[in-house]
Length: 143
Image: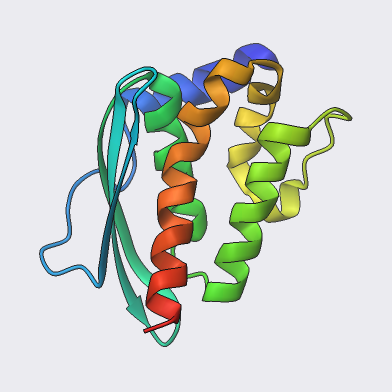
């Protein structure tokens, strides 16, 4: 299973989904991991309290790019509440996944990143984009 997960991660890193920009985003958020040099910009548009479009640009390791690619696929068309709870569930999976029982119904293909919890120095790589989207959601919701 680990080999399959690694293959999926590498595929999303080499061929990321939703990579690019949005001309007039409702939200643009940037995150930087100074420890390893990863950086990401997340572009979002919203319609009817849902994520109508989400794209990203990044420079960094395979894990950060794959995580962003998987995240954009998962969060597209989610409402604020569902997106926020999904983000929280992902964070829980990569930081507290001692029992190795991620909720696949909520997390979908992002469960390929569940083993990140075993590598504390890589958690920031996987979660950086998720934190940026969560901040964008909170900012947009409060406006």
